[in-house]
Image (cartoon, rainbow, N blue to C red; front, top):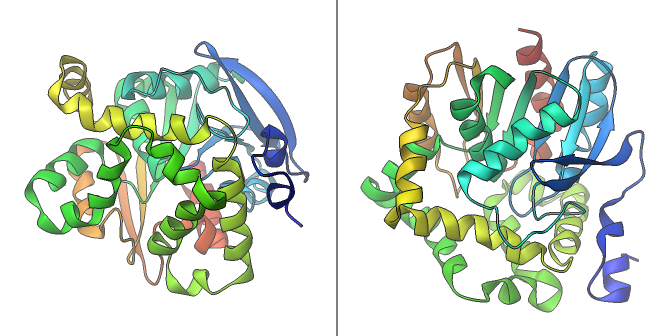
Length: 310
């Protein structure tokens, strides 16, 4: 039986899943981050999305390591076993977390892979700190400026993202974690492709995500990033972020997008290519929803390795 079901509110230990990887903590950008690491060679840094944690990449870690890379999956700021400070969920700080982690892991550059919210952070890191991002892989995430323009100008994307507006409500994190984080399960079901949703692997994935989001303060921290993204549009800090994101991406970028993604619509994601000056590839994945790394792990691992070797 899951430890979450036994104890109610879990602690950080629920994300310390044993495996071939090594769990450790790394200090970067003023916070302590939990990472799962496997392999040696050039660094591939893996950033999960909402409502996930590092385990979202557990299938890719050994595949990437076997291909001759150092694969590191991180719990983002506020998630899993990483620090959960009350502040620091703005786009600038989250991008600096990525580059701080690269340096703290002893590397000068890295291949950065981001899914969902982690993909948005990857875009920001590549725009603001291009010298540290050797190559970029983005899954289920439009460039932040493309996403913003779509939310303003496209009714379909506004409808797709309407549910996230509820995250702006005060104390909504308590709604997210109510009834063993049942809402996390509902969101995963809405955003995941139907083929994966019918598998035992999905059932385990859902349970693990619900456990991790129920760690004290994790839901609050996850909400804060979305709250900043919305509220910053009316503030000087947000204007500065938008200005920074207008810097063209000079990092070679691979964009993988699920054709059945219901939260980041394919038409929205595809428009991201105009922000990339470097080599750019777009691949639409038939029958796949918002979580390609979980729904088709072998294909995603192969694409990451191919792009990293490029």
